[in-house]
Image (cartoon, rainbow, N blue to C red; front, side, top):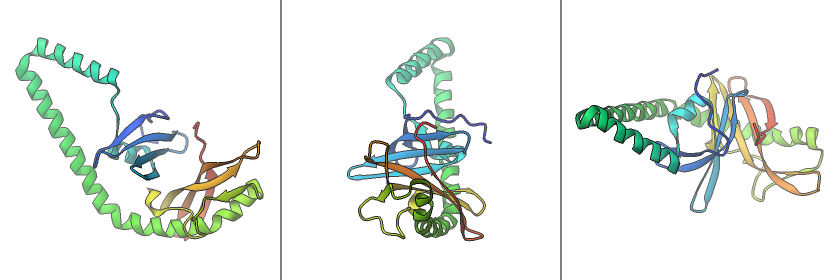
Length: 209
């Protein structure tokens, strides 16, 4: 298990690469899963990560309080250490951030082809087996959002490579009936073994994890 700190559920985040904003929907140390919901214009989606991948690609958005604290710390540093030291630290921070971004891009380029292939394979297998799993836990108390075809209930664009040959995918197209008879949208997660071409398990993502 990674020693990185898991973000709080509901935390606002920003993707380092392109500035895309989102919100942490699931943060589960027990399953090493961080789910980020993002939205821009008329588009929304959910992305799944393990904690190390999340830390490489996303930053927690700074609140007004955090920005004030950073400004106060900077003023104190200037008073104690002088303008020269302050400029040196800023230059060091900029170099470190640039190096981290370059490393993240290099890692993403190296694994992109494998992730694309495994994501598409997982999308098909997870989509086709989802009904059988849902019937075993919910009988007929589920339905799929309009336009979710049998082969497209999961998306290969929200699949994360969590181990060699193991891919975790998420579907946000499932509607599950609650105790009051209302169908509500939930997240269905699927773990897929691409080496053996089989689904390992499904589960409903709990928003309070």
